[in-house]
Image 1: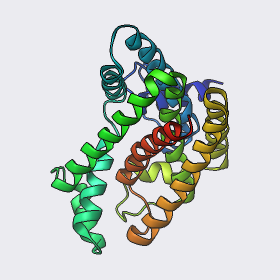
Image 2 (image 1 turned 180 degrees about the vertical axis):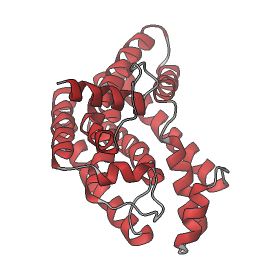
Image 3 (image 1 turned 45 degrees about the vertical axis):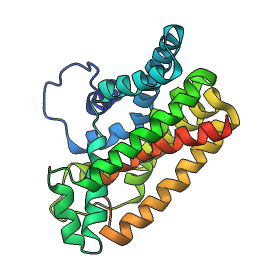
Image 4 (image 1 turned 90 degrees about the vertical axis):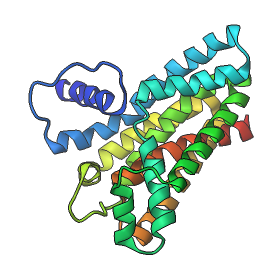
Length: 250
């Protein structure tokens, strides 16, 4: 039980800006990898906070302002942790083209290029537009997009190899994601989808499963595997896709 609590606290600390307490010693890589089982649980907590925020904002504000504030709240809760993955992936893949080493070099560079900036703007515009539709008519569905976004990470780390030969933070997760982590994450996500959005939640979850499979195939062909930036890209784009699916279905 203590190890599970530690894993949940680590997941909370890694994925959010919420207080999770301090850790007295260095955490083994295997334990860090096992925290992935609880990523959707952290997403559930984020989703419930966003749902509560949406209900509150709806009392006093227009849907447009409420949607913008939900985006702001999401950013504050996560520290924009995965947005860097969207920008770096867009810069690397669209500027590096077919040169794998050039793609890796661009993705590692902290400079924000025009492709990355455009991808960030389009992502936030998509999320805002979808939230604008959902916040008034189906606020409970707001719980789902942080859950499915974090589930997408686990499915990808379970099925992929790490691409950079020198290793990196993402390698910890690809090397230590087993069936237990994937099963717990899938059950949590699927159950939440059905509870909060019924058939629409189920269909959205299956769409994310297929979408992550396509990312895995593309990353393997283009890069030989995934990187931390690809994981961040997958999380953020899966959130946006979940919101779009919910708008279409609800």
